[in-house]
Image 1 (cartoon, one colour):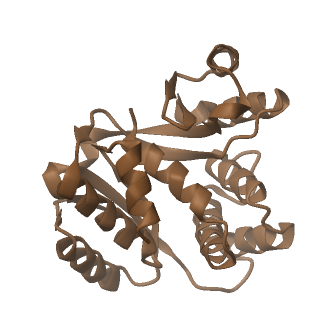
Image 2 (cartoon, rainbow, N blue to C red; image 1 turned 180 degrees about the horizontal axis):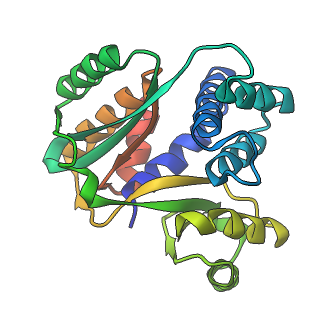
Amino acid sequence: MSGHSKWATIKHKKAATDAKRGRVFTRLIREISIAARSGGGDPDTNPRLRTAVATAKNENMPNENIERAILRGTGQLEGEQYEEVMFEGYGPGGVGMLIQVVTTNRNRAVGEMRHVISKNGGNMAEAGAVGWMFHRKGEIVVPKEAASEDSLLGIVLDAGGEDLKDDGSSWYIVTPPDALESVREALTKAGIKPTSAELSMVPQNYIKLTGPQAQQMLRLVEALEEHDDVQHVYANFDIDESEIQAAVAAH
């Protein structure tokens, strides 16, 4: 069971305000620019860009914003140049964390990440200490009411997906990285709209947290996600949905 996918699902439901939407757009624009810079500006030949553009459209981002982000990434439009960095760390209870950061100043980002992590009960790790605990996968979240397990499983497996799990209020689908788009498209054709669909770092194993450790872990993830340079936080915790709901409601 993916504790972090539950966290992401519940946070997604809470992120409907304009301020949050602005933050979502900022992160998507950075992802589009980085993808275009690393793999070219054509979504047809750049899978990472194709996924980023599809996610942006799912969030109703205007086409001109998407096009500008691509042009900035390929250098055809002036703008800040971002660098992508993956930090590794440990949270309460020995939970492993990968923190994807996109920044214009790597040295500043190192100091700020170390400060946020240590302030919230964690510590930075050496490169490679945590990364082996995760695999790069496609992650799709579908609302429970959108489809039955049997119908969803057939669609997912036929389109190249790997796994379907009951994640409380949602279905949680795992795909190989190169099958993310085909599974998303198969779901859309079947009239099923995912809550989210993105490339992710999926843990091989999970650490169960409860009580004060669970609350501290959630505070750490929230503090990291609130940082302007942080794109994604991946962590191998498993926390009951009721505890996550309580933590979200407390804000």
